Image (cartoon, rainbow, N blue to C red; front, side, top):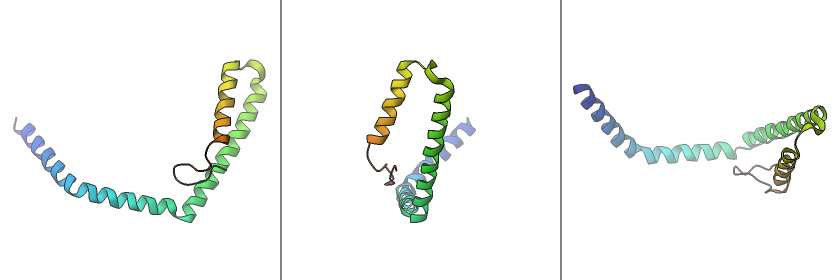
Amino acid sequence: MRYKLTFVMGLALGYVLGTRAGRERYEQLKKSARQVAQNPAVRNTAESAAQQGRQFAGKAYQTVSDKVGDRVPDSVTQRVRNLRERNTNGTAEDDWGTSNT
C-alpha cells in the first residue's frame, strides 16, 4: 500500500510541476520546430528527398506495371489512377509550406 501511495504522490507531483512548465516548454519547442522547418537548407533537403522519392516511386510503379500487366483488377487500377490524379491536381503546397513539384 505504501508503494502505491508513493507512486500516486509522485505522479501527482509530476503532473503539477509538468503543467506549470508544460505550456511554456511546448511553445518553445513549437517555435524551434517552426524555425527549423523554415530554414532554407532544411527545406531544400526535404524537397530534394521528396523529389527523389517521387522519382523512385515512378520507376517502381512502371516496373511493377510492366511485370504485372493486365493481371491487376480494374478496381485497383482505377483506385491508383484516382490517387495519382488527386496528387497532381491537389494544392501546390503541403502543410509545411513546401511545394509538391
